[in-house]
Amino acid sequence: MPYDPSAFPPFAVTVDLVVLTVRRHSLCALAVRRGESPFQGRWALPGGFVRDGEDLAQAAARELAEETGLCVHDPAAPTQDNGAHLEQLATYGDPGRDPRMRVVSVAHLALAPDLPAPRAGGDASNARWAPVEELLAQSGYGHAGEAVAPLAFDHAQILADGVERARSKIEYSSLATAFCPPEFTVGELRRVYEAVWSVALDPRNFHRKVTGTPGFLVPTGGTTTRQGGRPAQLFRAGGATLLNPPMLRPEV
Amino acid sequence: MPYDPSAFPPFAVTVDLVVLTVRRHSLCALAVRRGESPFQGRWALPGGFVRDGEDLAQAAARELAEETGLCVHDPAAPTQDNGAHLEQLATYGDPGRDPRMRVVSVAHLALAPDLPAPRAGGDASNARWAPVEELLAQSGYGHAGEAVAPLAFDHAQILADGVERARSKIEYSSLATAFCPPEFTVGELRRVYEAVWSVALDPRNFHRKVTGTPGFLVPTGGTTTRQGGRPAQLFRAGGATLLNPPMLRPEV
DNA sequence: AGTGTTTATCGTCAGGCAGACGACTATGAT
DNA sequence: ATCATAGTCGTCTGCCTGACGATAAACACT
Image 1: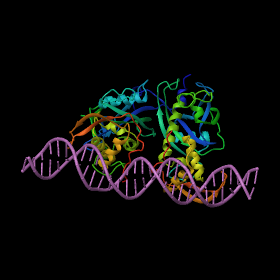
Image 2 (image 1 turned 45 degrees about the vertical axis):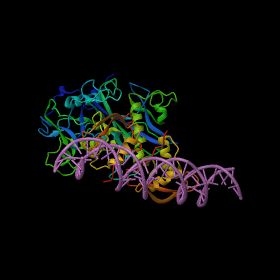
Image 3 (image 1 turned 135 degrees about the vertical axis):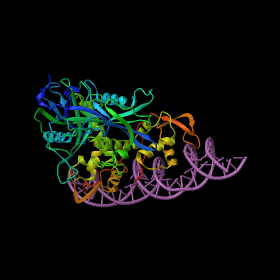
Image 4 (image 1 turned 180 degrees about the vertical axis):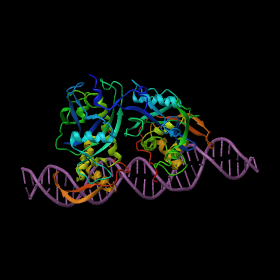
């Protein structure tokens, strides 16, 4: 028995993506320039409609692939390379958040290693990685800074929520490795934490913490000097996902 | 410029509620019996359609009030009594999760103190508080137990996610006080933790932890003997929301 | 009145972990 | 050769937690 269509208002459902990466020691998010009204020419988060017969996670993964070429790292089959972490963030459904009609957006959070270059999607005339601090300035969610127009719709709120989720989640999970290439050094992982939290961490205590947590890192045997200085051991992400005790974020 | 209606499939959007409370030393959830097909006669989580012009949080608060009479405790105006904690949980949008049509449900989590009795909503022929362990048995999310039919739709998954959220969130926030009446003793708060986590905690270490965390509890000056034994100091929830360092959940 | 039971509250002690920081190592640059 | 850079190993101190003893204040019996 189908529902009586007059019993509920129809909604459009979209997925929006907060895609985060670490570039040049700062936390950056993927932004696309809107080619259509409303907010034409303004920066926005990538996203699109959920299609018929499509799961929310599928829709988010499809949008992510369209915008970045990233495949979602499936925990069940961790053989793939260049995989990103993807998780649902929150849902935004204020009436009036889109002036055209009632749109409910299921925001997702994606964490990716540093990528060569963003490629613009179909309906976006441009795309770029921008420091989150810059995107959130002017919006009341960040410190004042560059004079960039605020993000379209309620995307500044969504981005702020995604950044906060990422900041807190790397405390008690091994998620920070999602920002790293498949093989990385302890120093590279530390620079991820430092960029995401905007703090400086003691290299010695950090090294003790991450190498002492069972299952967090597994050595690959190789070394690298790509950061300069003494060669560093290379690691892959271990199977552990929960960090107990957590990595403590220093006080402000 | 409105959207082209043919550009996206129409969805129905609902809110579903995971309302948790602690009754007789066990964590219970509000369940309503379905009066209509599909899943007629089965237990389900309370919920309903989001109305035109209504925010998601408003819709959840309205459903909560309809089902339980609870008002949402607004952090901005903490003068109200009998207020419950309400937060968005996650969104479930599998095609086919409702056999009638495409429905996206924005699940919310509510935490309430022990209530006198549930009152059935309009379209539910019955309502009750049931131990979550009982509701999740038979569903693969809990231990085997009573022979109760599984919850309707994907509500077992939603309930399991809500319970897990509550279990982890009381670790690092003062949210456990949302399960308590406005004034409560340290022992009552401890029994909340014990019920939610299904563990036994050392009363002396627990007392030291919660009274030693600044801003967690503020003494009201009164005492009570409603639990028997030596009179206990009464407290109200303090302003602190984050617990740092967190309350540690004992190992299994 | 005394005794037992229950619950609350205060103390003590040992082990683990984090922050601060010294020391040493191995590379490339000048 | 010397310096700068980055990585790695140790040490020490203070805080927090888990385990548990001891005391306090109520009630229920006898």
